[in-house]
Image 1: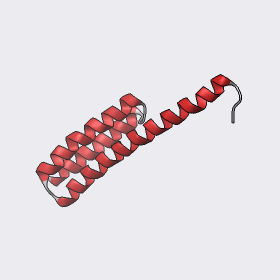
Image 2: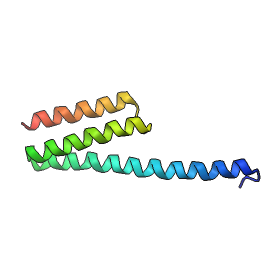
Image 3: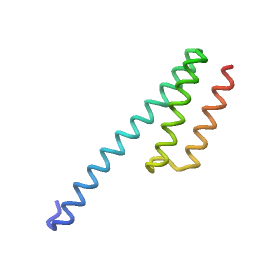
Image 4: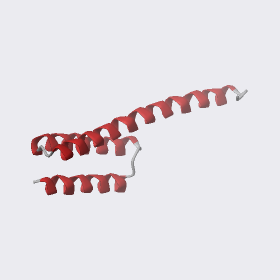
Length: 87
């Protein structure tokens, strides 16, 4: 446990950031799982709605620094191919 005041603040700040990142990652994963579930059900309309939500979530994760932009592009490309294959 730190003794210096600024170090104590750093510990608190890092814990808050960790909790925010954890919540945002969980939200992203949930969105991606909903898209996969919509694909598995075979419902094209539901899959398109879930696709839009998932792409938005991936883009949001990039702006928050959770994903690298190339990783996000790969995920979006993969989702697009899966959606087009469903048609």
